[in-house]
Length: 124
Image (tube, rainbow, N blue to C red; front, side):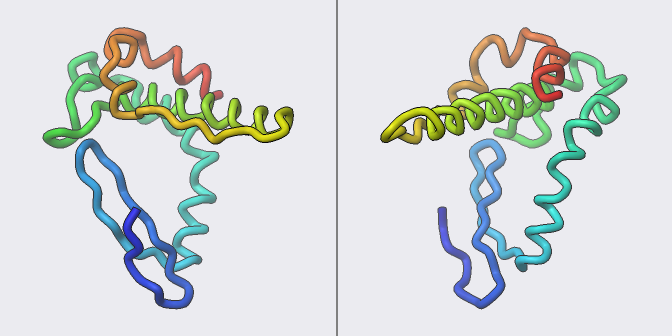
């Protein structure tokens, strides 16, 4: 992560999309606005994805980027990993914060072959 500024009220942020990393500055009120949008994403996803063909689900939004299908599966995997980290923190004396290779997971066959309805169910 690259710190983009030390100005009071600005939060460092990195946008990761595919192989691209770029840093932006967000004012703290803007950051809170985006954080408050997160719970609604799960409700909006099925509506946004309804009617997309398999070809559209498998098309990256930009060169080197993830497909819609990879993003949905990643969201479910990320939530499951967060739950496991939280449970470990509650039950272990000295839990370690395990990470995972998001980029490698996105290339696994289940991200390409398993229908997004599976991950949408997990996100509910």
